[in-house]
Length: 113
View 1: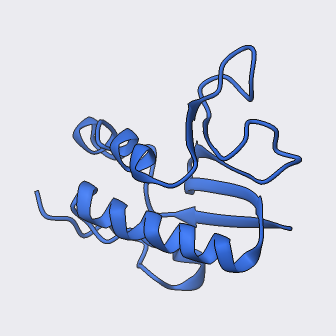
View 2 (view 1 turned 90 degrees about the vertical axis):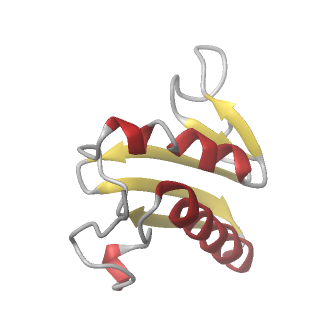
């Protein structure tokens, strides 16, 4: 397994109506466990597959640069998972979701209200 990283154009300053839909995307994804608590993982952080980040897992945090994913998993499985996340997020959130760092989207949001 390898450490994976992705930074998507889902920014903290997006309107509440967009952020209200983000958990719907989380729940659609394979391996969804829920949000961390005091007892497991980091409180409030979304997790997939495992709350223990030293095992196969995915977690995400909201950063000024966007929604930041970190994962420990095989590269091919990660690519499939994050591709599906971007597809689901694009449908549910109403704008093209992608990784700015690899040129999938520009730095401005283009979404249909």
